[in-house]
Image (cartoon, rainbow, N blue to C red; front, side):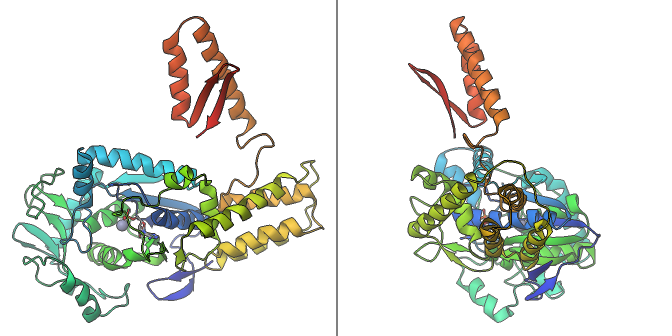
Length: 465
Ligand code: AMP
Ligand code: ZN
């Protein structure tokens, strides 16, 4: 596979540390609000990358964090604590906010067929790991204590600017422009590893540490969680382009200082989705979420299809017109597939030819639009039987995850349908016996699984929500 590496600014041949195994880390959401569809574009790209690597035969060990503590906007000691801000907005505790929005995030992901990584870890669960790393960074002279906080001294890091490719003067503009400068730091780029003193006196989440009661900086959580679950050598680290500086730059600095060697070989970043104003924002009243798209009647998978139409390294501008066009093509594609004859008649002759083409598209720096073109080529190929086409489409959909093969009656498999019908029958029986507790329990359990029962005079039907 060839993939663009932000570290070298080149498309490179991908070689993992261990043959056939890929250790992959992806920065997770900050759970202070709903994810906007821009955030979700990044998770779609990472999902395709993971599934694409699997299609090529790799075993992917993927880890993702959930930021539920100390994510400050801008640099690590300027701006606002997003979690605290969310809690104040909703008059809830930070823990309640984190629980609620973590669930909401994975709910959105499931609607977009984004698979949950095998390991998902909350930042607040690994405080001991960060403390151990910070202690070592202090021992090694990479970190220093100032006014009660522990900072990483970037002047000690090897090639601090290598990932961003920017020179200190360019970056300095950003630092100078920030509203408040932390006077405890030796130089402007130094970043907080542990805070006991901060302008957030009302910080709810605090832990004991050798430097006093406080909380970790944002960057250390990803270095810590990655090290704990994936070990000393990482193959791929992903995120959106906004993560390159300072977040990933600081992750590299502290991880490599701690480990004493190069940590991750491939840094893969997804470009942003912008709206007509040029930037996605969560601060404006109605921001773009999957729920909002659904409330306007869009199928979330039409949004996934929209994203796959452009390369992950290109900026994408969202508009409802563009989504309408994508949804039309998506529905047309699914209808075409639905009409294919399912009579078993597999012709092997061209299967490898198309699979190889699909693999080549994955290997070509994750070219999703090419993957879709190959799918259309399969549909157009008169030499293929319908059944062979279905076989290939189902195979490609392991990566694309667009639910391209529908059940003839509905989107859910017969097994699930049988299960639901049985539950409806059990509920009807309970109601007949005036056992309303059991009847309600069955209804609520189905609802938890995303199946809503609808009662009418004609009987009970259901809806997948
Ligand atoms: P956050 O929850 O703010 O930590 O962001 C979650 C992920 O979304 C990160 O990987 C960001 O890089 C990414 N991201 C933020 N804004 C956008 C955007 N407009 N388009 C695509 N990805 C984004
Ligand atoms: Zn991260």
